Length: 185
Picture 1: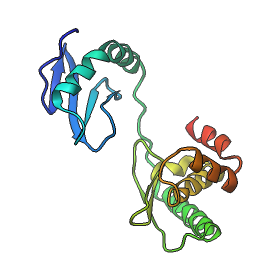
Picture 2: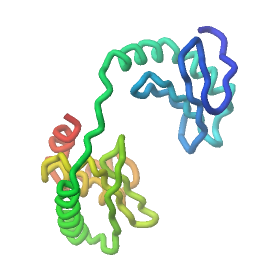
Picture 3: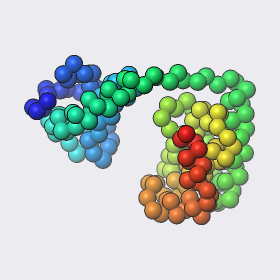
Picture 4: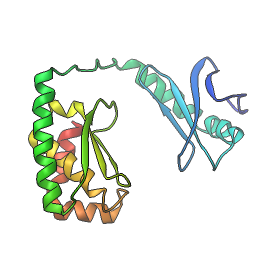
């Protein structure tokens, strides 16, 4: 593909490939390929136009086709359902670790909850001082859950994942990189 396609927000078909175009808060134009082979083009709310998004899609098209082919060749993993007992066990574990690390780090009044999330282990809203943990942590070891708790509580001090964040994580949980590797495996 050499010329930018005529696209609009929402569902599109570009050269027979389903492309969903969305506008949201983002720093740059992003192209991703989701399970099932759906291509998602994200255009930043304030920084880019639809035409710029289409031009970016053209420049990334070879990558999109290669990645989509690889994604379609992989079986789509079935989402695991956790029993109420597993979720209750996770709730107890997260409550214990969250309270322990909040006290250690001097972060009082931080609320937390569990929620089903597909792509993240946890999310920290540092403005509201609220942390949300993924239910899929129920299948993980105590050390991996502890890593996620410390990671999210560290975001109360440093919002990104840069050198300052990594230095704080090194001070708080020296083996955090190994725990993260196990969690991703």
